[in-house]
Length: 87
Image 1 (cartoon, helix red, strand yellow):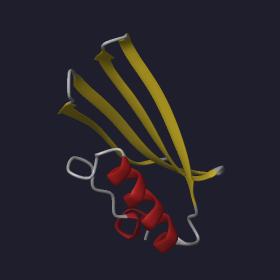
Image 2 (cartoon, helix red, strand yellow; image 1 turned 120 degrees about the vertical axis):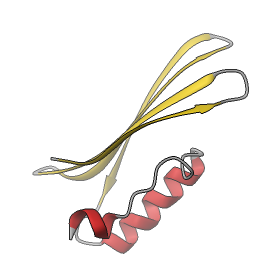
Image 3 (cartoon, one colour; image 1 turned 90 degrees about the vertical axis):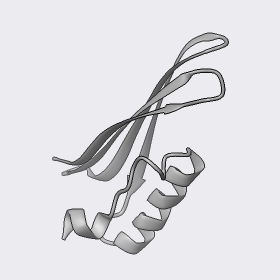
């Protein structure tokens, strides 16, 4: 089941970045998928990231999620509150 999804478009240094984020909860567990697409100096860039989270420890998972969004400059366009989505 997809709990959250968002396509966030933003300006980069030399290109237009597209970030697609999905938060999943299923039999495998709770995890975040992040896909990045943009045109850079070396051509088209495609990157995919998956972060495993713990549905039993939402506070710890929220900290991991917030750090990831901050590290990838997504905190302005993507706001995810795990307690609101799961409880």
